Structures are given as structure tokens and as C-alpha cells.
Image (cartoon, rainbow, N blue to C red):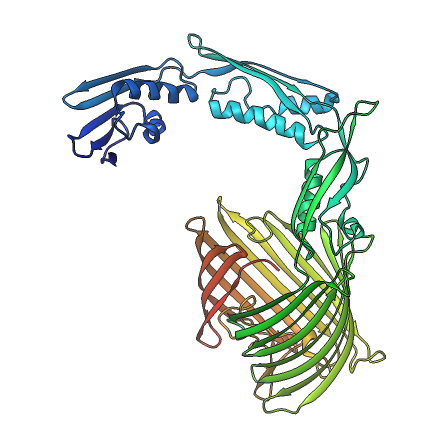
Length: 564
């Protein structure tokens, strides 16, 4: 058995120690340019076959993969030391490139494919680059229109004397493909009409696209109905009279269980420890209606809810209805509320639009003040625009959200009001991996008074996701000894995150904000601190320790650090 140990050394010369168990140590000394030593290091023999002949052969083969076809390699054994000296010589570069693609390609597509060839004339010849260039062109053909494309022949002619490489690659694009009929396998509870509601791209007559197949697969996989999706076309379908192939699309599905009962425990720095139970079925009344109901008990909030989500309509809009009952005890304010709502979600280009109509009745009891009741029927519209490089862990981009809603005493409300709310997160790269995140939030409820308006349509702030360094919803309007919602909100935040490796990072942040009932009383509460970040499968998990300047308190916050 051979063991390899690295000795302290500069890269020139490079020295490795090979020890044969139960025998005298054998030292291999490599003298070569730095980059050549780094190239050979992982591949030098680690077993009993560490002979001069084998070392010479391996060195020659490895150098050839990097374009060194005329190296001077000398292996000598002296005094139980193997001396390997390498002069790699001149590196071979690509001279002529001859790439041909047969088949019914339009000139623009052919020109684009050849222009994107990955190993052009003048570049150093590397075996991996040669393989990648061939594979990338074939993948481009397979991805659009030509599902039967193939590489017929390829050749790299190397001239060691002139250090030139001539490359040839010959492809057959094959016939043009378009999607044929959709054949679905595996359906038991659901009808093909359900899949048709989600299928906007893979339709008969549409030109074949690998991206379209992937999009439909991802869309169906994200629904509550299926646990696995496999999709492909019948590639051996015969061409028609025009030489094109109308290939049937085969969709294999596996349905999720009809019922799921779940229990969970957890904790939040905002609302404390929690336990919850949830029942879910994706096929309520055998209509493919998704039904979700549950009970969540937290230290500061208790919620019972039931929601029904309907499949998308012919314009890809999602509708839902729901009802809830909730009790809270936060910052000296106890509330009980009951609500019912309907909602429609629609994607308009890059903007998600949510239209909703919600009715709720609320009873609130602040410590040291009178108990009051209020109700409101509120139509609301919310727009969200996301332009980020990663939805769960953005490094660059922006997320903007705006909403407006209101109520009238003429229609099931105790007070006339209009509520405006907007928030933004802006992600600025700091180098390759680090990020500066800027966050802002403003809100205004236009009304004669906050009295008679449910707390959902007023503003409190403080805690995780708003102003760190302060307790959850502790920034607001004093009523008795409790903190209640005000008609104005403003929050600003800046956070710099430095990633130590792929999984762990550290953050420094400054937050400021307040919620008041009159602008002249606004005085931004400042909070700042440090935090740790861990990239979990659900997104970065943040744990922050923050100091609130107004209260001179230190608060611990933890939450998923993902954009809204």
C-alpha cells in the first residue's frame, strides 16, 4: 500500500513523498513550471506501480490533454529518488476549424450555431474544450426543432512540429420536429382537462422545444396534484410528406395521495413557540379543488383557517376562497378577528397581480384603554414585480410591491378609508458572491381617524423583517399601555452580507423605522447589529443580534432571509 504526503515546498521544484508500507521510502521529485506541476499533482501514481516508465507515460498522456504534444520528459532514478524533469514545450493551438451541419436549417440558424462554436481558431487546444464544443453544438440542435440531431463524425488532426490543430466536426440536424398529440399516462382521479388548464406551450403543431417540455414539467410538478412528472416525445416517429415529424408527446404522471395530515412544532422570534396541525386534500368533492385547513397555536397568536384553491381558468388565473379566526396578544393589545375572503391571482408579463375582497370583524382590547369593535369590507389590489437572478437567494436584482385597498361606511364598514402600501428590496452585488441589500417600506391609511379601522389596515412595525433591535410590532401608537396601529409607516434598511464559503456567511445591518398617527410625531427608531447566514434548501436562514437605540435593548431575530 502506498501513502502520499505533501512536503513543504515551492511549486518549482515540486516534491512528493511516496511511502511503501513495510519498505524503504521512495521520493519523487518533479521539476516543472508551476502550472504543469499543479496539473500533474493529482494524477501521479499512488501505488506500487510508481515506476519510471509509468510516470513517463502518465505525464505524457496528461500533458497531451492540455495541448502539449511535444514535451521533453526525463525520469531518472538516483539514490532511491525518482527525478522527473519536464519541459512542456510550445502549446498547440487551433488553426483551422471545419464544422458542417447537414439538414433543413435556415441560414440564420446555421450561422448562429457556427458563430457559437466553443473552440475557435487561435485558442489553445484542450481535450475538455474540444469535447465541450462538440457537445454544446449538438445540444443546441437538440433543444430547438431538431430532436433527432446527431454528431456523425469528428476529428482533431494534431501536428506536433508546427503545434497546430485542425478540427473537423460533421453533424446531421435531422428533420424538423413539431409537437403532436399529448398522450397522458398515469391519471386515476383526475381528467386530462386538468392538465390542459396548465398546458399553454406544448400544443399540437407547435415547433419542438426542449425548453417548452421542461416548462410544462416544472409547472405540473409545482401543482398539488402530482408527485412526479416525466415528459418526452416519440423520437422515432416517421416524417410526413413535407419531411417534418409530428411527434406525439408522452406525459407520465404519478398522483399525490388524496389526503395528508401533518403536525409540526417550531418557533419564531416574532410570535414565539408554536404547534400546529394541518389537513390537506388536492381533490375536494372530486373536483380537483385544493383544500387546506389547520390550527396554529403560537405564544402570541392563535389561528384557525380553511382555504379552497381552484385550478386555473382558461386565462391562467387562479381563484381561491378562505375563512379564518385569529386571536393575538402583542404589545399589550389583545385582538380577536374573524374574516372571509376571495382572491384572484394573475400573471401579467413579469408582474403578478392579486385582486381580493375581504370582510373581517375585529374586537380589540388595549391594556389601560376601552375595548372597541370594528368591521370592514375591503377590495384590494396588489402588484408584485420581481427581477432577480435567484428567487430564493438573490445576488442581483429588484423586487417591488405596491397595493391599494379601501372601505366605505356605505358597504359593511365602520369608517371610510383608503390604504396605500409599498415596499421594495434592491440587491446590489459586492464582488462575485457578496451582496448589499437595500430595503424600504412606506404605508399610509387615508382616514379621518384610526378609530373604527381594523388593525390589518393600520401599521405597526418592529421585529424580524422590519426594524430589528425592537420587539415584534412594538413601534406604533400608544393607547393606554398598549401599542396599536397608526396611519403612517416608514421603514429603511441596509444590509451587507459576506459569504465565507458556499454555506455560511455573516451580515451587518442598519434598520430604521416607525409607525405613527400623525407625521409630525414621526421619529425613526434606529436598530443595528450583526448576523449569521446559512444557505438552507428553502433559502438563506438568518440569525441576527440587534441593538435598538431607542430602547437600549438587544434583540435576537431569526427567519428565512428571502425576498417577499
